[in-house]
Length: 75
Image (cartoon, rainbow, N blue to C red):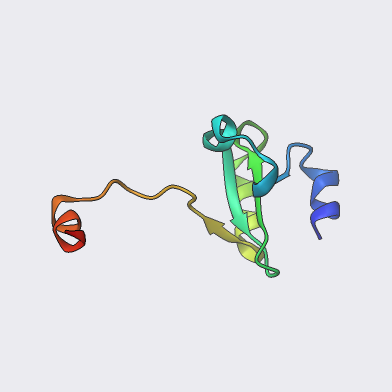
């Protein structure tokens, strides 16, 4: 499936192949095989995201900052 998507989205990349500086520029999705793939946001339209979201699970790679309450649990 990834090879087929690459024919449509030239910027498609696997999570393990991207540099830390570039992660923010991609929209991330989890495949049925638990592979994390990204497509550069400039290449995606709203329709593309909607279509990809029908058979891939959108994924947020960023974790929010720890709140003071959460920090208290860890100490």
